[in-house]
Length: 78
Image (cartoon, rainbow, N blue to C red):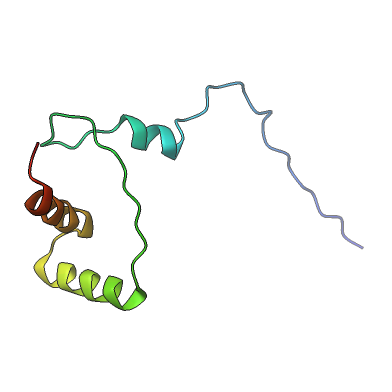
């Protein structure tokens, strides 16, 4: 009968935790924006999301950039 050896890693340290995703979103800024960015979450039908995603992929753009541009066209750049 053989025995299996299990090694136990080093004891965890009390290093400060890395920033959470929420903290990153709260503190990030876009390279071309001069004001703080805020997150906007919306629900869209799956078929609409698929159409948006495929069109953006063909143009080589990001969905967020396209939606941001549409919102600026509708509501202006105040």
